[in-house]
Length: 322
Image (tube, rainbow, N blue to C red; front, side, top):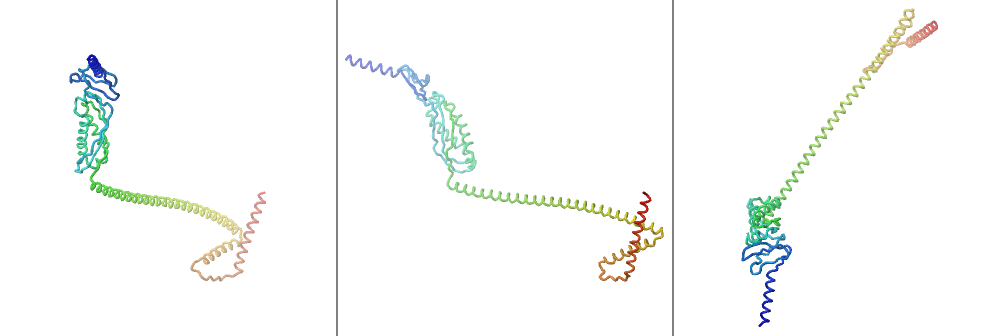
């Protein structure tokens, strides 16, 4: 009998020690209740409670958790039905609030997320829905995180994984995309032709400008050449006139001294000039020359004699000057 009592006492002591000593693992927090009422939260480590008075209320996971959002149908703003699923990342920051402010925290977050997915995505057009996932994620995160804040929970991220439009809508979008690509191709082709025409017109314009500049420069050079030629002709005429004046002076002096050969020089000169004009006439096909050979020879001889006299006279004047 005594052994049985001792065994019962030992078992009671072991039970009391077991009920008093509590160890909380890393990443968890335990709530402590006294007679069913929350008193405090135990952090990871070794703890002791009053047996039969205190008890563990909830064992809360304080690590970041991942929850899958199942697929659901959503009607967009333009009445397109799409199937959507997602994923939620959350972390409990206050064990007491997550345990006593809401019943079944995970189910509450899941329902809240699915409801807001329908709300947010239902206010958008299909095209906007497919091309603005970042906007959808940000709006969902803002709304759900604010709603779960009283539960001591922080929603860190919400991601829409897949958006599946109906098959006929996908085919229609494919055709629309193809038409849009063809339209862009035609626009780009037309734009290319337009640019080519503009460049060709600009090239033609530049060519005409350069050609006009070339003609202008050519005209300037031609005018300068004509001017230079006119200056040279004027100088030649001036020299010819000077020579004729000198010749006339010499002949006049010879005539004044009584030389008949000077007169023959003038007559021969005019005769030769008249004959030259007659020979150069474009309408003249046949030239009759009713002239005597002795007359021409006499005239030439007179010119030679006149030149000789003028040369001797020039030498006499030179000697006298010395």
